[in-house]
Amino acid sequence: MKICVCVKRVPATTTRVAVGENNRIDPSGVEFVLNPYDELAVEQALKVKEAGEGTVSAFCFGSSNTQKEMRTVLAMGADDATLLQNDDAPHADGATTAKVLAEALKDGGYDLIFFGKQAVDRDQHGVGPAVATMLGIPCITEAISFELQGDKVVCEREVEGGRETVEAPLPCAVTCMKGLNEPRFASLKGIMAAKRKPLNIVETAMESAAVEVVELAMPPARPAGRIVGEGATAVPELVAALRNEAKVL
Image (tube, rainbow, N blue to C red; front, side, top):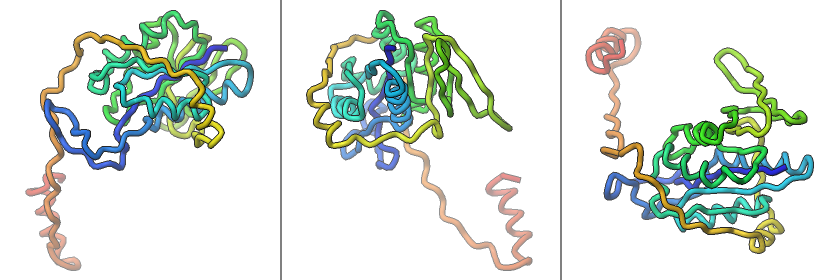
């Protein structure tokens, strides 16, 4: 079985970011990591591989700085990795990224393609379904359980008020949600082995962005709180402040 997992390099969710030039994040002092949802996708791909025969190939549309994250995926257990390199890739919108990935994967003959639910930098949740649509294969989104049953995949998804079970024939794509698994840490053995595994660098062109960022700004500072009083006598003033100032009533 041929398995593919698509990943992205993103700013760590704990890092402090600042707005730089051209409506982009200033990378100075920013810690970059493998997208947390993509870690779930890598783990699930490896679980499928370990349950039977197969190989796991990792793909990323990213800048030259992404090699560190690709080595992390190899250290976790992927067999090979391909970096579709373009220094403007981190600023590409979901539709543009999906086109690049679909073009790279179309002749790969992959039975399963895993994605994280979304990238934590843009939160669009569009790349996985878009790639599946371009490849003409079904896509199960936000999977919290995964089971391979012969030539089909059975997953559970959380919906309002419960869970739903979804089936899809192979080949198919799956986007991975928290709760699906617990991603492994790369072992020392895996880190050493990753140095010998192939990391293919492919210089990749991309189309003009389908979405333009008109303005990027930090959220306004939260105003300081105030105490309106104590006990029951403060209730009328609190209600008035909520109605007239905060406008939440």
